[in-house]
Length: 130
Image (cartoon, rainbow, N blue to C red; front, side, top):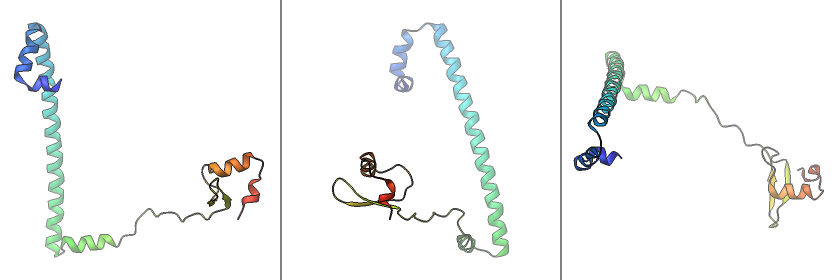
């Protein structure tokens, strides 16, 4: 569809099959879409310009105080991160899977398939505790 709109020959061929009224309606809608897009672009440019003005204000303030951007970045690196990874949970259960490999499970999340099969066969979960 977009190829038809952007290719003059294809557009002319499609236009031959349409009435003048349909072409006029399409032109109005297309014009409206283009105008909406212009307004969006202008708003985005204004927002970017405002952001750049704020950044320039802070650059000027730093320069006036004799602080380099590198010094500021180094200072920002000293700020501790807000989110830390939680500690790894220790395993609570130990079992042997169908391949004969010894596996462990913390008791969190879905029960491993091999352990679930053992439990389904009548084994008690407490018998696998570490």
